[in-house]
Image: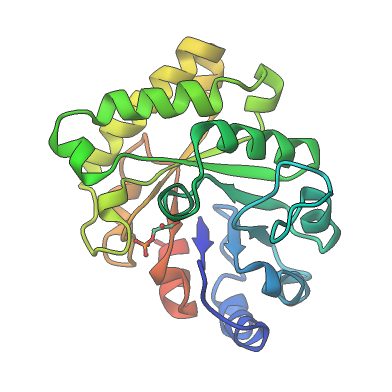
Length: 244
Ligand code: 13P
């Protein structure tokens, strides 16, 4: 269960969140818990998560190790503060910051090179769904973004299916729609990396996941976890999701 805080919270607000969140998930050992705050809060989050099984992740990663890339943060920098995950290719980055399947692949490879677990996001936009192109879009994103990895690299990634029309809109995909998309993604994985890899890969659903709809989503065997935006900002509500 991963929380993507997007561009919310200061370090002080991060510490306050963890103080409230830690006891609520102290006994939640059925899943991994990851919180992805803004870069400026990574150190505070890692510190606040010490001694718990909560992991901390970045929301993006540069494809280079270091260099003249103003505004970018590299894998070794993220790893040095103690974060162990990073989101890659979120639809907001694709939409507003020119992220493409090619750069998603490069960032995913960089995450793996520097020992971070990438949570690679795919998902269709509303017009793509309405024109009946969901499957083609997911297949294209998988083929260009994920299939460029070696089998060993692929075994270490997590995929997140996030239909763009369900993000921050309150319109959750029905469990059936989400499971259908997950099946499409898994089929791509099987075709490229074999049945075992397809069965093993964890696919999270993201898009308006809340404490009151998480149970029906997680009831789908295809759905292995969730990537939560808005509802992860509040300790009680994210704990409610984790403890579904
Ligand atoms: P919401 O949960 O706010 O819809 O955001 C989903 C998301 O984009 C998580 O990465």
